[in-house]
Length: 87
Image (cartoon, rainbow, N blue to C red; front, side, top):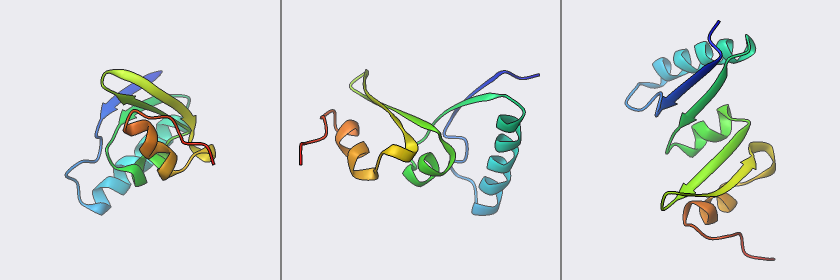
């Protein structure tokens, strides 16, 4: 039983059909109890397949957010190393 899977850009360079196949297999693993950690610059992929998002800037963690409770604009601030502005 695989308990943890760590990947970097798991679908980069793949055609859409292949990427969907890979994610379906990964989701099967997740349902069977495997924790999955992945890095990706594809925000659509990040929002679709993650429960939580950890953002780094300059080698430092700038935020950890629940995917359902954040937005692309909020992530933009974290990716740039800034906190979300009030208002």
